[in-house]
Length: 194
Image 1 (cartoon, rainbow, N blue to C red):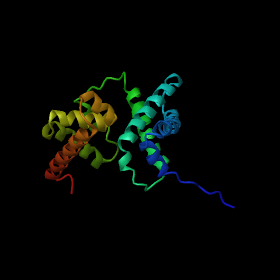
Image 2 (spheres, one colour):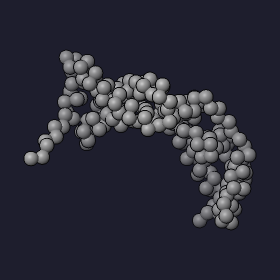
Image 3 (cartoon, rainbow, N blue to C red):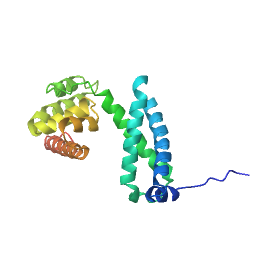
Image 4 (tube, one colour):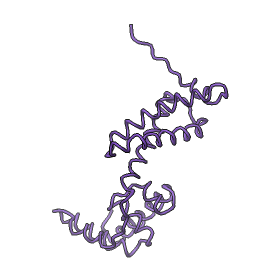
């Protein structure tokens, strides 16, 4: 006989809202989030001595985020699946930030020119990269150049860049979108894109 799976998806939100059961539910949920965070941290390049601390921070932050967004849980998935996503996201963000903690983010204005030179064997690719390298300083603002270079060439995680620049991920995505739109328009004007 197949095992019956009990879905406690409605019990969790109720228990987390009820003052009589809230503390115990938070403790159970935190334990679940800590397991998820430890799993995610273990997948990352984090020294063993820092894993528990990062996982605990991620579980703490995930719990706070879940409690703040409890009313957004629609029941489209199991509550535990929904909650796991918060822990995995927080753990991944903390691991990325830790990896970039002591790294300086420098913007190299010559980077676009070098990438055009390393464009590969295909003439069309080299020409397009050279056109992009020429268009970047010509049509983008300094802020757009910094964001595009950091994210596209240097591989800086968006959350790390947002923290360093004192802005939000959303603002950086908007800047990146605007920069790409300007570059595309410039390349279309030069007949390099359809």
